[in-house]
Length: 298
Image (cartoon, rainbow, N blue to C red; front, side, top):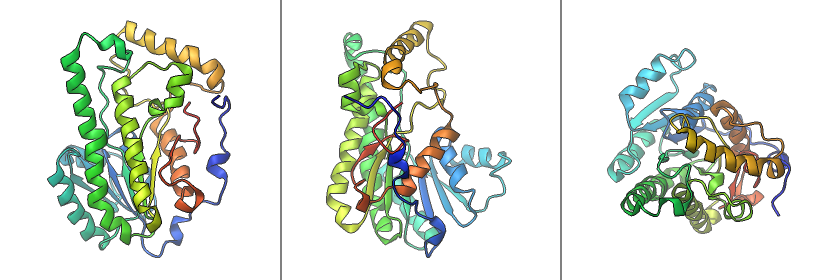
């Protein structure tokens, strides 16, 4: 039976890594850094002047404009951006060369945040989509291209830099929806295709960890929680009702302390604690945890 209490001890069971103690300036690459959770990672990591923070985005011009108009970011010289479509192998390959020039050939943290979420399956069960066979095929292929295949190439191409880094951490932003036990025990029917793509990503992280854990490289899947990034804004009243019904049924027993969607700021602040604390020697290698550092998804 899944725990009914949010247990924070998973986050606090050891002293956090002090990034200031690294012998070189900590370096971060964040994919999907133009908005939402990715932009908040960019904001929080760049708040330390000694950090080198690099955002990989699909639209560099728009992102640079957004940063230049952001009162808290516009004067930060430690932020860099490059154009990368995560489904474009050559884009990723080129970004590795550019990142290497900035960091001196190494990388401490790779945050694989870029992901595809579509409204097609967010509010339905798998059987409810049965009469849309062609769309199922298209949506699932698109999600696997971004959420799985793109990240495989991202990890393989950046591994040489990570191997030369000090922190040696590769973090993939995944989803509590992809947890089989949550789905099985609580009959969570929502987002079946998205959930499957993120479950595949979790396995990819475990496989990378199985090969590279001996080298001290951490591969960790990290779910951000239920974050308000605008995915539900265009939901119809019927879709919103189905979403509410599922969570209304689960929350009282599974997560009685759950207060609703959290902001990207709250989510990233919690995830940063997990990222700083997690290490191969602490048993995190290849694991898949929530923003609380455990298996509590709400």
